[in-house]
Length: 282
Ligand code: PAF
Image 1 (cartoon, rainbow, N blue to C red):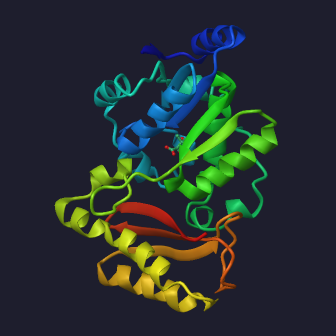
Image 2 (tube, helix red, strand yellow):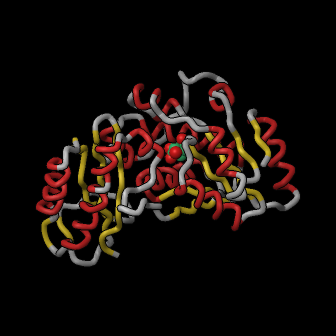
């Protein structure tokens, strides 16, 4: 695995590979890697000639500065995990490489309603930050395929929109959420849970399963309320328990018995904010 710290060197290297017909798969990350990331890298390696991973904790997507400061960093360990996963190139840029003109006048993106619902509502500016960094990384890497995890369901939809906006021909490939044995979705933030919180964290998965099991035609509010109350009883501070159309993420009040739906949860245990989702009808 070759490690690059500068974007120009990486771009030059990858351009040569592209010109010689090599396919490039790209997995952007913020490090503190877990099996969820590693599966994306393995898939990128299996489906492309080169698999490129980036590790950059992007300041512009954090609406809470404490969350940014506390974001775990485990670079040595990440490198040890990436090599056997088949990662060929790793980019570990400094902030100046990603935002060479500073962070004051970054582009903004017309994401429509996606920007203001769910994560967008509770984390204002978050998806603009995600688009700023992903757009820049795509310009640097110019991949044929981009791999992202469906644990960040809304982020996948936002990035799909970004690809339409910037007219790039990169194919977005979304991959299943990887879970711990008790159902907790793997996330770098799980490292910040203490033992007691970790014991409770899988309640989010159980609430999603409960919604899937009880889903029936008609009003959805009672199900959302039941999920919210179950989490509050376990000591979570709940941002939302929502049920949305799976294809466009519009929140739904009722179900017609046919439309594919996804249930989504965001909730805090102490200072740690966890998100998860599950398709509850197909
Ligand atoms: O999902 C993440 O880890 C980040 O939002 C991403 C896509 C790497 C952009 O910083």
